[in-house]
Image 1 (cartoon, rainbow, N blue to C red):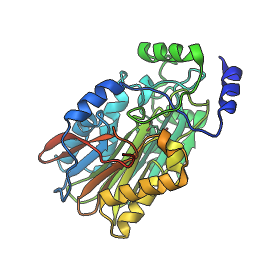
Image 2: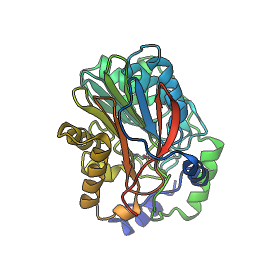
Image 3: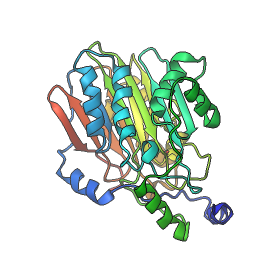
Length: 333
Ligand code: ASP
């Protein structure tokens, strides 16, 4: 559509990382302010945590499996499928905001307690990228399949080709954006709404999942951290599991989720590990004040933690005591 014009604008602004408002920030701020403060300490298994307010519904889906003594792997797949199914969600699944050329392109990854992992990136017109990622993990010798190849693989394995059509809400937002076709510096906050989920089942096994439509109005073909094992999500069943949300480029630079798990291996608690990863991200990304990133983690003891760059990140925690939204602590005061 307006590719050349957009490209020129982008190149003029290259060097700074910009992003776009793509969520109902106001309502999230309101909900986040009524959430309880961050809990610390040990939580009995099973447990599932996931990013943002949409994590509540996703956790409900995961909890059905975990509470029936199901596997963490099934829980993290089915949990985030709830979010992918929600066409009102502007940042996950086919209801997501498009790239600058009007295409919704999806990224997802999944990893289990055996260290098996799979991902898809730049995938179009498939409703459940997380399930395609699981199929990559289980049915192929590969870890990551992208673009038209990923779509072909999905269709060959029983997924339906959905219509190429933006939802009414996404189309309206896109048309508004096209009026200026311009990036705006993104100060925080709830603009990044990937769902990342990590869970421990009754057997003490860990798994993780991550699925997103990525940054709104990105360059066609851009892939973020979410489908990259070790960036958007990572699991080591001996140590813990972690996932990320936010501006993927900053997370990719530090292999964020892998870093969180490795810090837990060194003995840091999940919250300390998330905090140290954010400090690393700050050190390696001079634009850190303009972006948001949040990490979530669970360790092998069933303890959990979160830490974000900016105020505004929240996460949902479900265990035997219920399913609750919590505000994360953050770096930039
Ligand atoms: N991490 C995602 C990406 O960079 C964006 C998000 O969390 O919304 O694609």
